[in-house]
Amino acid sequence: MSMQKEGTIAALAAAALGEEDARRALEALAIAPALMAESGERVSRAAFAMAMNVLLFHDLLRRVPSGSAYVTDTLGRGGRVLFDHGALRTVRMPQGPTGALPAGEDAFTRIFLPLGYEMAAVYPLDRLRMTGRAYRHADAPEDIPQFFLSELHVDRFDPEFQEAAERVFGSSRDPLDGEALALLDAFAAGEAVSLGQAARVLPTIVAAFDRQHEAPDFEDYQLLLSRSNEAAWIATEGNAFNHATDRVPDVAALAERLKAEERPMKARLEVSATGRVRQTAFRADSVERVFADGEVRTVPGSFYEFISRDVDPETGRLDLAFDTGNATGIFAMTSAGR
Image 1 (cartoon, rainbow, N blue to C red):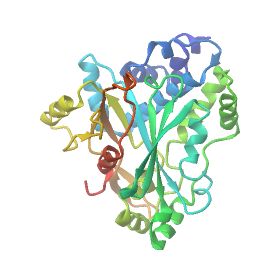
Image 2 (tube, rainbow, N blue to C red):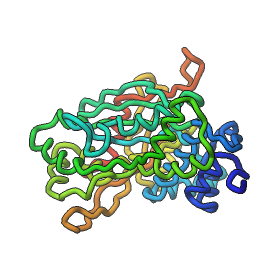
Image 3 (cartoon, rainbow, N blue to C red):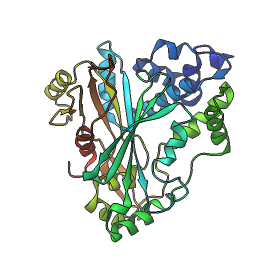
Image 4 (cartoon, rainbow, N blue to C red):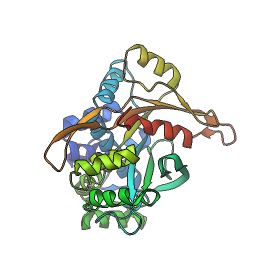
């Protein structure tokens, strides 16, 4: 089968992106050889999860020119990107679902859990009135990118904000169809799925990482923005990847080089309480979005992040944790007044 000639992940990427874009996407990423070696007519949850991440990384670079330029430069220097994690934001209404979407993070745990992800830790983001949760892949935790999945708690805001949030997010549709849910059910039952089914469903799963609600009213957007930069960001960008992160050996040295090159760097390095996890990022690229009145306005889009992780001496393994302080600092990259 021609689709299978380069292994499962390559085959799924080519089916979704086309041969040339898939080749470029895969050449940019340092993917564990054991994952890339899978082939055959059946697709494991690990291969499907990695293929999904390849597509999400490709989409992030399509929307984030600063990140794309960095990756091009990295490849030119003979390097590759070690994709550490992606982040996305969700909305949890005071009661019930978010339009037709399951409430808050439930819209994505129904994807992550069948694909082999497990919740690794909870990170209260009280200053932002949010909660973050890390989801780590059980089969290859250091090799398959994690997700940092956050929820905005609408019930922690005033009634005026809650009404605007209902108007903006209440129109959300559910992107997952019957075949996508059937594939997730099969993975949840511990089954592999056919290559053909995986190729058909993968774009539907990836489509969940997008804005599912209608274009917001500008007055509602401004009201959300007056209380929460994060709510305003979700109003225009939805559940798209907020950022993708490159795991590098020395993020501090890299940050100094990128600042010297006048890249749009965050001013300060974020260091975890343990000292083992260090993060910085580019500031979010601006994007143009159409609002409900038909006007096009410039708003913050997504961004590209960098992280270094040290070995945890207690386990002898790479410290894959996150940090509440780091996360809060990184979230500021998409603030409208950054």
